[in-house]
Length: 457
Image: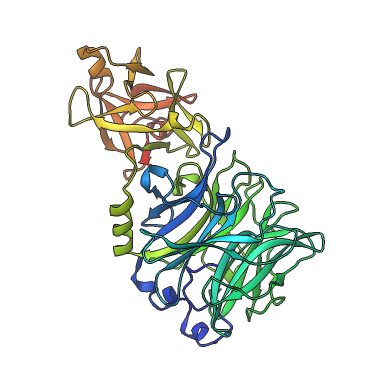
């Protein structure tokens, strides 16, 4: 049900056969993206089933809003949501849809989905439950698109019929009442998480094959139930993946497809292609993207520069940062047992990777890493090894805890950190443990990569 596709003039001319959305006509004006999600972490310490938002300028690196807290929380049904989705409506503004499920009780059977209206994603109104069926089953991962031929919105979701999940559809003009459900797509096995885009008049839907946790592409020249046929083999990162989300770059002829691993131990993966019709996707290196902290099951929509600015002004960027390793980009700087190191995301306590980058304790032109969950403690070097320690008021501590940001040795768009009191030494990881070592332009490439990091969220 995605709403972030560019249609060619030829595609736009096929009334009723393509997903016609307001953003298609104004795609040139978009310069950013908004993402809806909920949160979980490996031990479920971060579990929160309210609506979270993040924004991005490039569609790859994301800034959580509202300190990664929910911007609105359901108060009806299960009083929790999963799988949020944002649609820009034909009449302006947005509608937000989500699964009615608070947590992970997969036996919970709700015939409803959560719905909010929003003029700008800064305020939310008209909160309600929309009944989509009367079956003894759930309504998972709802998404929607405008069906120009019918003059209505289609709401597509997963429900069990015939012994397995299929994709069902209801039609609505207002997201207050909906038509009776129909089977939209049934491959003969468990299928969930449908996601739609249109390119040159052809409609594409990617979904999760729930029997092997891969993503499959289908296509159709119409939007009619039963008209989509599979045209790709399974896409996956070598582990189970779900929740496909396809979004087009605002600046290039590139499409990105996001996927979320299904467990709380999971994380996002991202693929790209220049040709959706080919069904061929290349998995991006983790270096290219950063998901919002603890985010699950994203719903992504393009937004304008003014909408991006307004959202950031309303909800605010985090007061903390995460710092990613260049050559192990699935790992982030963290403290563990007071030792500075890099570890694979995600992990708990997730707060161990959160840092307030404050003016350097020894020189305000530099920076010091103050722990978010131990705010009286800083990363400092001792015998060249990095440790988390409480300030003792000495000049030596302040000096050991101060670094200067410089252009990254391995990539000048990233960052390297030079020690204040050992200016020939830089922060680097070695066997995943942080230390300071001499690094120069003639150092081995591996050393320079070890000393390069990305400051983000």
